[in-house]
Image 1 (cartoon, rainbow, N blue to C red):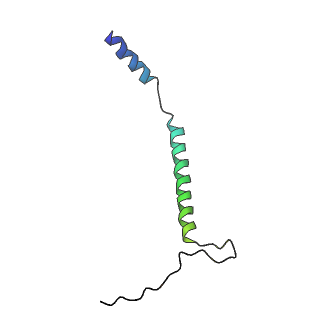
Image 2: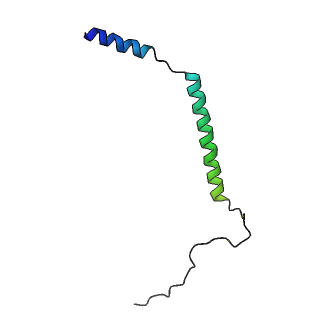
Image 3: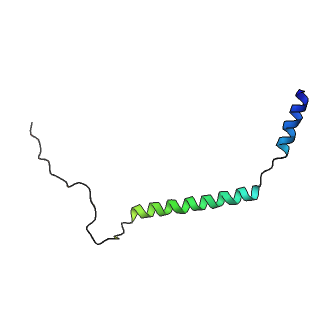
Length: 70
């Protein structure tokens, strides 16, 4: 009985094959999309485009702290 299960798994694995051309094409397309999106994200953070004419949003107002004397 063990020999029959061993041959069954062997036949099952030999029937499976990779479609390397589709796998390679999909990998290249994903790599290009991720590369271009990464470049766009990096450039969008670097370039501050003024889409609205209002004042730019800044952080909280800076307050001066007097120096402490000891």
